[in-house]
Structure formats: structure tokens, C-alpha cells
Picture 1 (cartoon, rainbow, N blue to C red):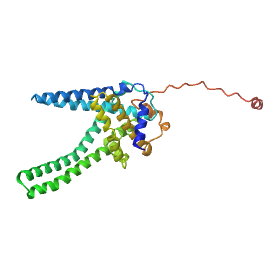
Picture 2 (cartoon, one colour):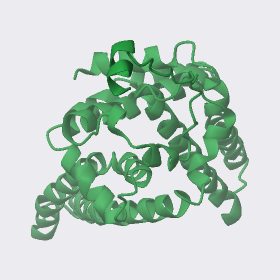
Picture 3 (spheres, rainbow, N blue to C red):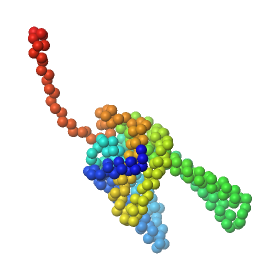
Picture 4 (cartoon, helix red, strand yellow):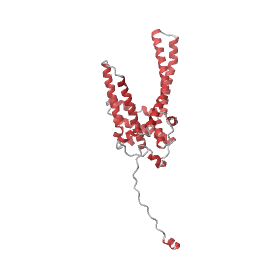
Length: 295
């Protein structure tokens, strides 16, 4: 799979899809709200007004809410990419809030945060040592302590940064794995979902990093358009990431769609019963010769 192929398929899936704007409406509006909050806080700080603790927490709360809605949209688009949905709706934006998924996702998000926090702490420790060493070096001149702090701190900071990015990429498919395991009733916990994500991403972390990097130009245009391009970029980026998982899943662990049992389909929070025209059975006509032999 190539990055251009993944993005092309994502655009094709979104092209003419009924309900796509409604599906992504909540996370897009939240992004607009976050932009407004950042602008307002910047104005207040220039006026010498410091935001309260509650006001500082509000963007974090909005980001958490947005994560659930964008994950719902990603799961829905995954089904579109798999050919199991031909239209979406605003109702699909809240599937992660269903009893089947919400607590599992909360557990997964918390576990992933704690695992990443370990590597981030290593980066912060190394960076702090480097800053202290550089400060001593510039204020007091060259000394054994300053050189030692720089010599040890810089590699630790770089190593922590690399490991935190590497692990973030390795865990990136965990929510998709959780969703598929929930649908197929094979969910074994957040640790299992993260382990499967690591397995899927072996040899593909760099490609996924490049896929995300390829959207930098789009997000620059979002900034230049004062956020208006979110209506195009958010569905595009989300669908491309879901399509990346679909290709990994098809290569390594996927069960063909036609082999998914009726029970598994109906356990899907966004599964909709297809309409099938059922024709009446045709009664076979007995052969006249056979009928005479029977008589």
C-alpha cells in the first residue's frame, strides 16, 4: 500500500457520501471553539489578565469530548471503506458513547496516556538536564558539571523524544482494534488492543508517520482559511487514517466481510440491517415419468 493510494481511496469514500458533513460536524465545531478560546486567551494575556484554572481546563475538556466524536466518525468511515455502509448520519457521531464502547475506550485512552507518559518523562528529564547544563555553561563558564549535564542530558532527551514518537505510532491503531474486537465479541482488554496495535504497526510506523506528515500543508491552509477548511480536512484526514488501518487489517488479521456472521454484524453499534428482497420459493414440479413409477 502506498500513501497516495490510501489518500485516493479516502477521497473516493467521501465523494458524494450522504451525511458526511453531519457526521463530522461536532468535532469541527469544537475545533472552531478551541480557536476562539486561544484567540481570546491571547488577547486577555496581552491585557495582563491571567486565565483562571477552570478556564485553563476547558480546552482540555473540549479536546476529550472531540476525541470521542472523531473516533465515532473514524469507526463509521471504516465501515464505509469496507463496503458495509453507503451513507452516514449525525447519529453515527455518538456510537463511542454507547455502553458497548464508552468504558472500553476510556480505559484504553487512560492506559495509552500512562504508557506514553513514561517516555515523555524521560524526554523531560533529559531536556531539563540539558537546559541546566547550558545555563551553567553560559553564566559560569565551562565546568565539569555543565559539560556532564549536557553530555548526558542531550542523548537522554533525544532518546526520550524518539521513543515517545515511536510508541505513539505503535499504539495508534489500538482504538480500531478495540472496535473490531468488540464487534466480533473477541475483546480481551485494553492491553490486548495495544498489543495487537503494536503487532499491526511493525514495519509500518514510518509509513504512518509520513501519511500524517503529508497533511501538514492542508493544516497550514486550514490556518490561513481561519478554520473553514476543517470541513474538508477533518473528514479527509480521519478517513485516511481509518483506511491505513483497513489495509493493515486486511493484510494481517482481517476476516473477509462475507465471512462475518450475522451475529457479529448485529453486535456492531453502527450496523444497519440491509434490506433484502426475498422471493417466494419455487415449488419443484415432479417429473411425470417418476410419478408413474411411484404409482
